[in-house]
Amino acid sequence: MGPILDCDANATYAPDQQIQGVILSCLEALGNPSSMHRAGQRSRAAIEEARATVRKVVGAGEHDTVVFTSGATEANNMVVQALAKQGGSLLASQIEHPCVLGPLAQCERKGGKVVLVAPDRDGVVSVDVVRAAITSDTSLVSIMLANNEVGTINPITEIVAAVKAVAPQAIIHADAAQALGKIPCSMADLGVDALTVSAHKVGGLSGVGALILRRGIELPALILGGPQEGKLRGGTENVLGIRVFGEVLSLLVREGDARRERMARVRDLFESSILGELSEVYIHGFDRARLPNTSSVYIAGVRADDLVVAMDLEGILISSGAACSSGKPEPSHVLLAMGYDEDHVRATIRVSFRADSDESDVKRLVASLVKAVSRMRAVSQAA
Image (tube, rainbow, N blue to C red):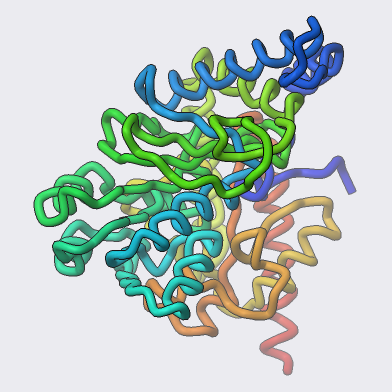
């Protein structure tokens, strides 16, 4: 077995060698940013520099709010729970991440009005289905920019225009955790009022994310305590994680196009190879706009969970769905919402490449997949 091959980058994009060097340099000064001494002030300056970098990368305005959180889950909960308390109708898609669907379900149990719209067969939330569900009392619309399992990209700009035409007071939120670093995520271009991003999806450290709010939008504090993060999130900031996040985003500014091109080239090679080597294979959303690194692949005659284990034994990491739910027996809620039956869903794997993946990685992955699938199909037919 060769070195570990990470083809599950949508779960956690581990820091590459360049970022590992950044992490080591950031360890030199980790003072409490609320302290007045020089170590504290260095940390405060580093946090504010990272905040400015986040604004730049996501196309936010100088006076827009950037709240550093423990990750995308906290950021999504912050905006959804806050709007749920203010009343009105809440709208999202059926393929949102569980950290959006969870607080929406809680709101509904407490008597709130929640509307979940379905995607099409390719996993895209269309403008028409959103427009049909909007009412004048809609207070929040939360539609992810790109799906974490299938990779399809939603027409957020058009959705914003449709929502504002009927409910101009509605806050429009986009979860961009999976999109950041893979496609442009400009709030100005998208027209959204709130955006969620995550550090470990782009090679930073786990435990850091951010919620960006358009100027004038005020939310109640989710964590009460000290004055940190504009009094929206009490507690000493994760200085190391935030500093590394800022450095990774600076890298994306410099190398973003090249990284995206490498991802797309490797992903396309994988898809053409697997379609050529195996029969009865289907790639979800193949002809639609997708993230450049993501493939959701149905392979007839196998169970995805068994295939994940077989690949792991070969030192190759893939997934049978989102990492936060792939350890559970339930099938993917995303593929079910797209209209596929449970057998189809349980035979679907997700492959997601890093920017430093190359052709040799694809050859190793495809060879191992073909061997494992052929073996599983032979056993199934013999039974």
